[in-house]
Amino acid sequence: MAFPVFTNMWFTLDRVRCYNSRRYQHVTNRFHVDEGDEVERYFNKEVQEASILDPADGFQEKVIEIEVRSDLFTGSKARVLTHRWRIPKDLPDSSTFSPSEKKCPFCSENREISTPKFPDSMVPGGRIRQGRATVVPNAFPYSRYNAVVILSEDHFLPLDKFTPDILYEGFQAALSYINQIRQFDDKVAYASINWNYMPPAGGGIIHPHFQIVVDKHPTRFHQRLVAESLEYHMTQEKNYWADLLSFEEKKKERFILRSGHIVFLATYCPQGMLGEVLALFEKVRTLDEVGKEGWKCFSEGLCSILSSFHQMHFDSLNMTLLANIDNSGHFWTQARLIPRMSIPPLGISDVNYFEKGHDEVITVISPEELAENIRALL
Image (tube, rainbow, N blue to C red; front, top):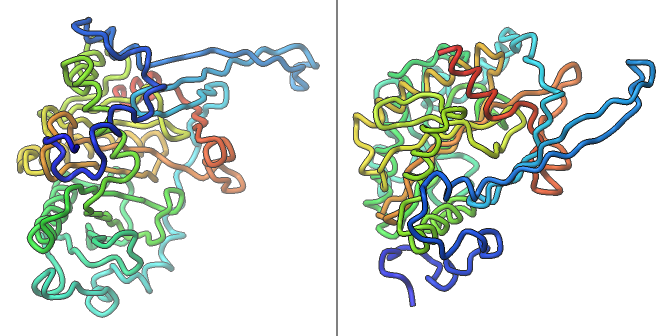
């Protein structure tokens, strides 16, 4: 029998209860413990040592530490190799992007004739406009309801040139599309706002744009977070995200900044070679609860993070914002930002066999160092 709070969920309570239960078996059935202790039980770390005879030091023995981290709540696992970390010397040469501008379908001179339109039954007028932002269908959709938000008139913007207004208008345009879909199909229950910025992050078009996905079912990771949030509430009688926020604010080593009720943290177990930043919308359970002030605060905080990435010579990133349309009760709206890069001098991908074949991420900067570096640049 489906649990009542999950009126739009496709999985049953029994599935939720047994969902990957072996991963958190050791933290269930423990009630009324300190929130910091409880959250920390989900964070595991093992330090391994590898010995080599180093040719750069006359073949003297060298011991290299590998830190293996796992987050039992998200199911993430990462190997922290800080001995490989160096800030990139240079930013990408933006002059190489100019040729792509002539045929860019998102540039204003091409937009009207080169981008598709929505059916009038779905979106009256075929497109949505909000300030500088324009919403059009994804010509190569990943989902039944998949749209693109063109953010600016500029074909290319370094990360430090995005303004809160540009991002805010983009988010408002995305919301307009999501609300149109909600009117068109009352069965949709989950939404995400996504961003592949620049080729290292999978961006096939340089021109800044978000991608929106609206669906009846959550994606696999979104589903896990919702299910784990419910499981935590059922076993601990508390909210995981509230406990995580309290724990990280007290711990301070991964805390980055607060913008209104939006809190930015470096994740304990990052999902990118250059780390990961989590933006938690405090006590915000649904998309409707974010409100205009919340989107303004998020846009301002996001601009600070983007500027810091730029100063660290990261000018590419993936972003995913996950939100429930209906109230799940225990999941908080959140965004995850992962800086990306091509490794010089050959432009090597920052994803390798460990991530694709073993579902473990290699990261070259510790979350604590990433947070410290960003705080220093704010």
